[in-house]
Length: 98
Image 1 (cartoon, helix red, strand yellow):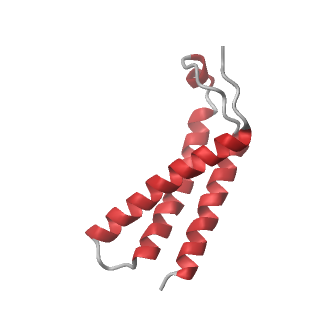
Image 2 (cartoon, helix red, strand yellow):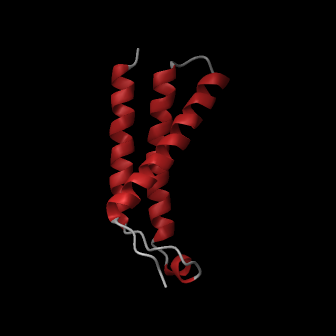
Image 3 (cartoon, rainbow, N blue to C red):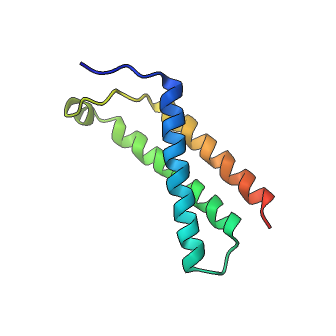
């Protein structure tokens, strides 16, 4: 039996996971390449994480994935909301940075 989770919880979980991974990726990029500011690197990391949400949405849209797992089905709008949130967060960080 599949567990039922609230859509808001799914949005928050995906946004936090993408945000943490995107920010860490931006920090690693900034540490490896000193040509960009930290805020710009983190913003780019968040934008890449937002793009990753669209890839995850395409993967999650396949029935094969849900038939083979016991995970709850995540609807497409949840991924889009997380992607938009990450994009806006990246834009704000970039705008507030130097």
